[in-house]
Length: 240
Ligand SMILES: Nc1ncnc2c1ncn2[C@@H]1O[C@H](COP(=O)(O)OP(=O)(O)OP(=O)(O)O)[C@@H](O)[C@H]1O
Ligand SMILES: [Mg+2]
Image (cartoon, rainbow, N blue to C red; front, side, top):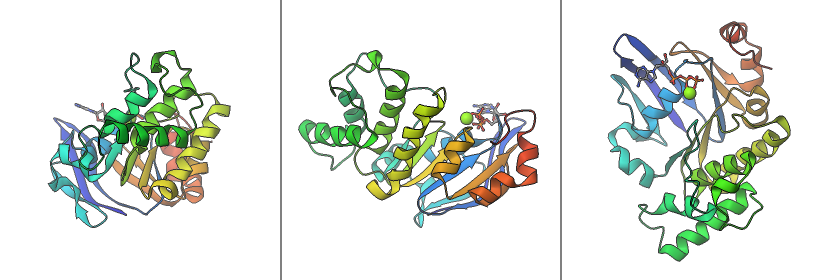
C-alpha cells in the first residue's frame, strides 16, 4: 500500500504536483489525467529523479523518499518509461537480466539469466530469448519493457504508458499480463495510461490528476464516470 501526503513539486513557476494526497491500495491501481497533468513527474518522485519541495511517500509503511535513489531499485522499485529503454543490439534475455546486475541477492550471471527467462515467459514473449530486441515487433518490444520491470523480486512496479502505440488487439494481451503482476510477484502496480479500456481492465481503483492536483480517486468505473474527470479530459482525450 502506498500513502502519499501533500506531495508538491516545483519547476520554477510550474507546479506539476500540487499538494497531492492519495492512497494506492494493494494490487494494480490506475493513475490517469490529461497530458501534462503530472503523472510522469509523480513516477519521477517515486523513483528519485525529482525531489519534491514538500510531502511524504510511504510505501508499505516505509518512508520511500528517505531512501537514496540507487537504493530504491534494491528495495524493489521498478519502472518503465514512456520511451523504450531496452538496448536494441542486445538480446531479450540480456536486456532483462541487466536489471538485476546491481541488485544484491540476485545471484550470479546464470541465476540472473534464469530469473530473466522466467520474466520473459511471464509476459509471454514467444521468441528465442537470445533474439536481439531490435528485430522484434512493437508488441514484443513493449513486453520486454514490462519484463524488465517485473524481473527478480519487485515490490513496486510503475508502468508509464506501457501500451502507447499498440493496436487494440495487442493491448488486450498486455492488459492480462499487467493484471497478473500483483498475484505472480507480490508487487504493487501503478499503471499510468491514456487507454481507458486498459485502465478499466487492469485497475480496481484509479486516481486522477489534473494540472498537478488530485481531482478524483476511487473505484475505476465510478472515477471514469465522474463529471469532473470527463471535463478534465475534454479537449485532450476522452475516457472511453
Ligand atoms: N524537468 C522539467 N522541467 C520543467 N517542467 C517540467 C519538467 N518535467 C515536466 N515538466 C512539466 O510538468 C508538467 C507535468 O509533466 P508530466 O510529464 O509529469 O505530465 P504527464 O501527466 O506525464 O503528461 P503525459 O500524459 O503527456 O505524459 C508539464 O507542464 C511539464 O511541461
Ligand atoms: Mg507522462
